[in-house]
Image (tube, rainbow, N blue to C red; front, side, top):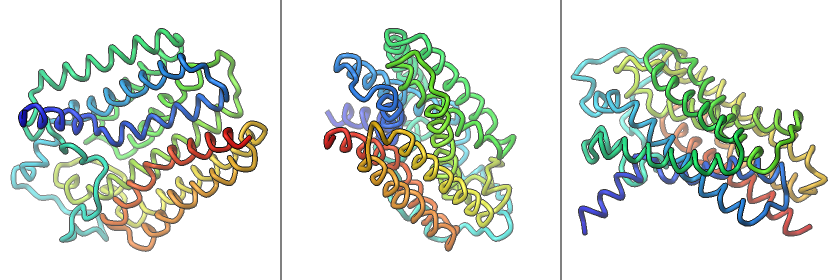
Length: 319
């Protein structure tokens, strides 16, 4: 029994289960933007497909980065590289609780899972996601495939360029947009454009750069090129905060555009979500561009789409 429980924990950790579950809110927001009264059966299919898709993509990230994670666990074979100007490893490491570490952090690199099991897990979940996507819309299939390819390219660029963070933002925007096309074939350039901008800015400024800043001391010796490694903590914090403001404004603009559907309650809830989960922790990071505040921002920003989704659902319930 203990072995089975540990195996489940390892698979949950491989998929970064908590983060993957929170990410389901992204396409669900897009779904509500397209259809405020989704058919229950279609909604259930979309939720199941989203869970399978996100659990697959997050697991694929660990699968593709396993060689780097092993080197990180081994201390980069004892080699060290200088940190960027103004950076210091710090004695505290990842002091804040880490949403990505729930279950088991990098279980493949830690040999808690075999490569065969991890690959089977990724392929099985991907097959489920693709089948559901095909039942919903061919556009959903296309978007899932494009997002998966972007994820693969992103991982391949780990030691090549810091600007792969742009791909991360585009990948999240593409994947999240599948929620829209799961419920309608029509294209609304304004709503979809604001939604994609919001998702890309939120992912890059709220998750990608802060997470890389929290991992700065581990990434630099491995030759991993991230924005914090290349440009240092201070500039990274400024860039992250600018993107957080852009994300909050984009979400707010989207709530204004859809005020006819979600009303004042949706608008106020969206603005509060942006302030609490993005701007406030972003300001803390500006004051202290270090691992602790960076990870705290990452954790809080991860709940941002969930909070906006809750605001939209509450607004519909009150209308």
